[in-house]
Image (cartoon, rainbow, N blue to C red; front, top):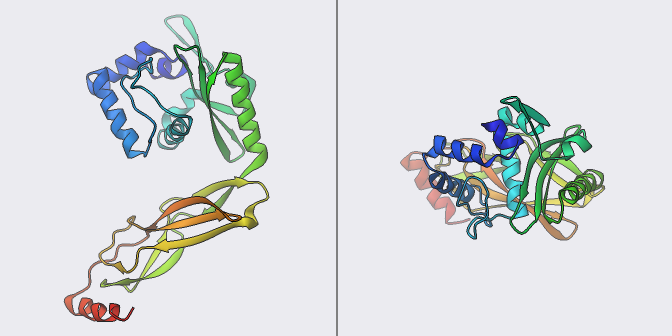
Length: 267
């Protein structure tokens, strides 16, 4: 079923999987909408599992790129299927509709689409060395054009941008004073390795400023967002990244909290 869904874009496979997962296609659409909301997708709404046309079934290139990235990150055990050019079922060869799999040896996914207005779509991904890029093309006139435009986007990205590692997992970005806790200082950072993509040759123009909510009061849980790392490239805002607590800090005893209350009056 997964190969039929992924390789052949089979609508019947999508419906069967929806019924297995949620007992009904509409019920799965509700689950998908809840997940879209959790992911912060602002321009996506589902009413079916197949993607067949409906006025209330829509998405954007940006949201499809976020969905693609989540799929690659969260389901690596299934991602290899997207690179399959063909498979055989019931003595019939089924071919992948993503023609980039034949044209570019670095491409290993993702999904194609077609609308009732004769528009063609393609979300593609390629990995060269340790870098992976995702492209989304919407609204081309032909299948050939969606492939060629996707290839142009991927080539442009690899040629003109670079990925840099800002911080490693659990590497402190800063050490901040925390009040009313069993510890006096709180380490801030990221729960996973943090990479960003910038135009090539622009590393020196990248600047970071950490903003935290003050005062920071215990208790604080590991992974709790404490602030935001504001990145600028040149003089322009570039990206905001949530910064979290790297440790738990429990609430201190009554005496220590009282002392900190007095100290806070003079901050």
